[in-house]
Figure 1 (cartoon, one colour):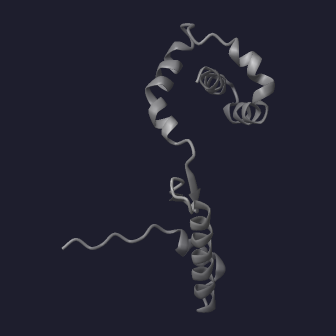
Figure 2 (figure 1 turned 30 degrees about the vertical axis):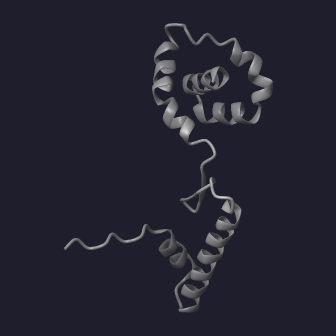
Figure 3 (figure 1 turned 180 degrees about the horizontal axis):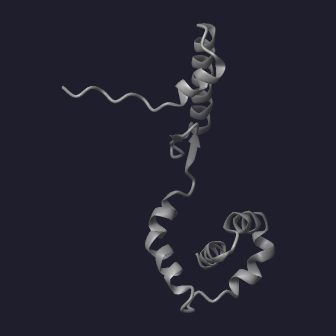
Length: 122
């Protein structure tokens, strides 16, 4: 976790965080030596390190998460890859049906991206 925290601190303290994130994610092995020398105990970095440590269980739980069009796929299932293909096929079929009914492709895409409606409260 030390190298990951150092990378996060470097990105957060950067003047251009998105560029720094791109650089760190694209060249982590090259930057590992530099990041390992970053002092995480310095007073300037301590608040960031503490905030990351407080959020670490939440960040760590996201490892291995896979979303397909915003819907989570259960990676614990043996057939996770097949479930992803089935989901993509179901969405493609629904889009084709909507377009076949005369709906514009963009409208069909937006309709399929909407959250399901909430059931009425009685």
